[in-house]
Image: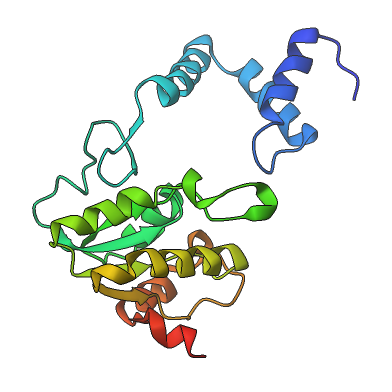
Amino acid sequence: MEFSSKIIEQAVEAFAQLPGVGKKTALRFVLHVIKQDKADSEQLSDIIRRLKTDLRFCSNCHNIAETEICGICSNPSRDGSTICVVQDYRDVMAIENTGLYRGQYHVLGGLISPIEGISPSALNIESLVNKLQSGKIQEIILALNATMEGETTSFYIFRKIAPFHVKLSAIARGLAVGDELEYADEVTLGRSILNRIPFDTLLRK
């Protein structure tokens, strides 16, 4: 792809680094920005900057937040005795959109994947185990993707929290093997949360 401007070429290369964006799509983005009013382009630039400067990870659940403690963790109406373990922020959004879960979350920040070099120590697993020390947690819900990485991570967590004897459940498999939570429709995902099953029954299958 030939460009008449080095700036356009660099902009296309930058946009093309986004997931799922090829160079043709990146070029459309760049041309759209060029046609925008200067004020709109500056607003876009400022929002992108704030994504890096004004956001942080909640010190309690590791969800993306604008404050030290996210809105879900600080909400007194949420059930603090139940924790739903998810891979990342997208899964929190997907479950919240169902309107059927009123507990708290714990965001792992990924899944165990030896092929990609992601070990348990790279994830927020130890902080989950530390939460159990208080004795206030009654149930852990594993809401991880129905993939090999998701199953491996679930089993690892199962072994780590076994000594605490808390209730451990997994979302019902209304989701097909290989499916990811963020792509599930709200009805299916909501029912999977409500109809969760004891995790150890999955091990006997």
